[in-house]
Image 1 (cartoon, rainbow, N blue to C red):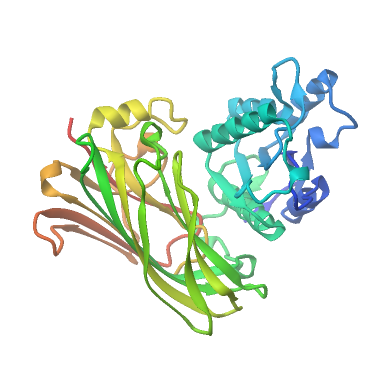
Image 2 (cartoon, rainbow, N blue to C red; image 1 turned 90 degrees about the vertical axis):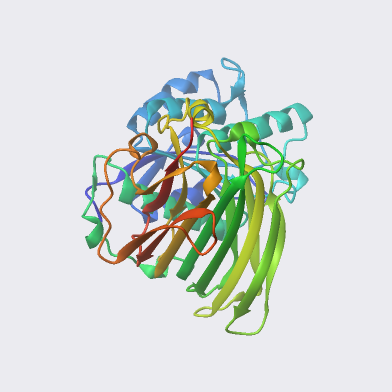
Length: 407
């Protein structure tokens, strides 16, 4: 991967209790040969500045938004914050966007949050807009922010065609493992769908997973996040009315210490996220092996019409099928991914799919020689299943198993 020239990035950020300043973000971007510009680099805020902002956004190749406990100054012309107006403008441009969100707002100091209740509500509404329209990365510490930012930029280089970035073939990408805080020896995920016990129009998900992870950085590794996303099912988001059951089934680590299941840190809306914590953090070159299971009620739609309706405004394209997905965001030695359905659900298995949503159902997929696909009934009578295995899956690639639903 090579950069032919310096890139321009538009940075729009709000403050946090960590005092993450413009300079820190700018220095992180300069490390990957990008140059930041934006409203934060103008001397003052006001309506007269919008023309400069528009010029900066036109010059920018991608956008970075950092949001935490403050809504920010409000633009009287649009009656939304400058940051929110900038985000909507960036979204309309069609250029790549990176969104970094403070994971937990409850732990912010009073000085890092809006004291006005109306502004707090506006900030939460803007946060929901970001999460509903964009894949977001989360952080609590300066280190997590830097890692999320740099990894997101790396992903753009690998997956996005932008003038100035010279992309080499995937087989030629050199992985600098020192830039990652972890390596995955194994990432294993097994999904089973059955008719919902509470809503006949939806599927319940029974999930089993396993991770074998190795810390690679001197500062160690404090946690691994397990998350589930209802990106196409916002009308049936996670809720206290449909609580998720989640359990850590087994664990071990090379050195002394514990593997702990943290409390859910997001369990409403489109995302459920929970941390597997290491106490004390895994030391450099130390490994942990843990298995977990979850039960997620009403997790997926069961009819084609519902998927079509839910994805009608999806920027990646409307679709008449569904899928499970795994993006390889850290170097991984082996990926095992499977999905199964009770046969009475009348689901047709489509197999592996790559590309954007709107193109997933076109053409057969050619598997690399190191990968394998097994289809057919699994060890449980009355089920249909497919299992995909990949050795050394490609970094920053997305692996999906897709299926079509009955009408």
